[in-house]
Image 1 (cartoon, rainbow, N blue to C red):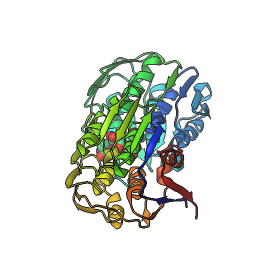
Image 2: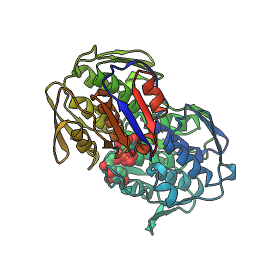
Image 3: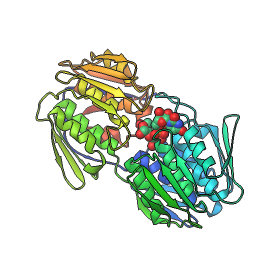
Image 4: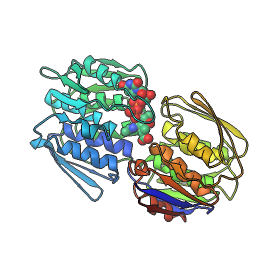
Length: 419
Ligand code: EPZ
């Protein structure tokens, strides 16, 4: 099992090129199922999760190719609507093929994704929304079997809580439904806007982008198009955090400040100097120790849960103390015991964590538990004195393309060791 060996203590300086967003790439790939002619998606990040979904879509009989940073798909040879457990269990977002398959082919059998380290992650809202559009849903032996006679019917969908995946699933399904669908309490993450923009390019009729109410007028069919995946705002925030925690200066390119304003505001509250360009962001910590910052994770445009672990790591060496509340997932503090092994002072009470900054963290063998927690351990190791060994880093390969090369490019002493 691969591990990272990181020698901490360097101020990180330089430029990082940001990749396409994992959390946009996955729904965009699922949406290829809706196209009745070839579709090309570029700026696709080469990640384990992306490759898993490409494999799953190929298993449907779709002619799909992933060459360089571009995926091309032709659904004319699609010959089944079955998404098996062995693939879905490794990548939960596979549930996103459910909506497109039912909408276009009238039937789908998709494995329930099951939970993951950060929570039970149910999909009840996805199923409730599809039923609101006339799908008949049966859950049996760990599989969702969805069916509709003829086409889905446009209708009213009201989510009980903001759900990114739920919004994406029903948005895709509604594009081919008969009539108009109104989606209320819709998630407003930039990755949903990216999906809607590609669907519109494919011929879909969608209004209310970036708001919590989406109105979709169903059409007969959707055609292929050329599209590029939006920049990864979480990867951007993660590398800017590397500058903040080491007192360095990092410029992230091929990104967009508008995607993560809430996070940039927090970096400025820490005392960092943040410069925004059209497609770049520079964070200069000027050798200073950051001020610890409090926040609550909330749906976009508020503070993203996917940046919680990374900013907690920065707070761990911050001046003063801060309170972090995780309101989205029920178990997203698994990085806390690992950070504590490195000398962090963090008290957890339910979904609240109080972090009291310490001058220095110290190297220690630690273990990654989930994707974003893994990056928070990398950040802590970059700031810690000594050499840190991080185990189970297969988690990090799910969501950070070329991570060693990008970190080495800004001066980090990191190498991957196997065994
Ligand atoms: C997406 O997950 C992201 N993944 C997650 O990123 C991100 O943390 C999350 O949205 C929140 O922003 C992808 O886009 C592939 P949700 P998703 O449905 O869609 C509950 C990362 O690190 N819920 O918005 O699964 C759910 O349990 C990953 O890149 C239900 O109860 O998240 C959670 O508590 C981690 N029933 C909350 O809603 C449902 O049917 C938000 O989940 C659906 C969700």
